[in-house]
Length: 120
Image (cartoon, rainbow, N blue to C red; front, side, top):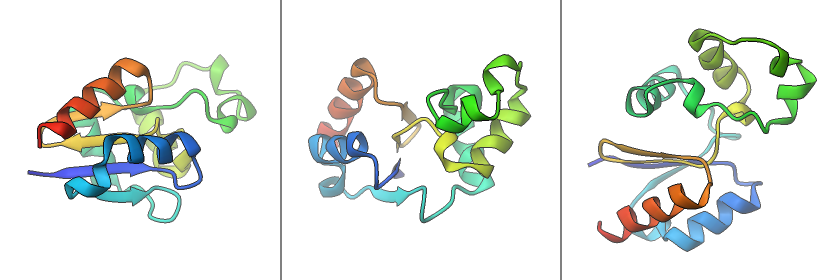
């Protein structure tokens, strides 16, 4: 079963989530998306599990406002291209356990991730 965790090492929220969920102790492959870029195959796999590239896209990224993207209606292809081009556009963290994906750091998502990790 695949166990993968995508994060940003400079993100204190991601660091706290790694510590809290103990993904490091559960045999997850942990990828820092800043030093090891997301590949097209990885983003396509995430999309297959999450349903859309938009669901993986972070509107909190500084470049979102800088590039004036909030005023544009983006296509799925544009979401995909932006995430591949600029790692900060990936909503973080992203955890994959088998066929389940956990995207972002909202409380409900983190509770579900923690429960899934504990069952491993």
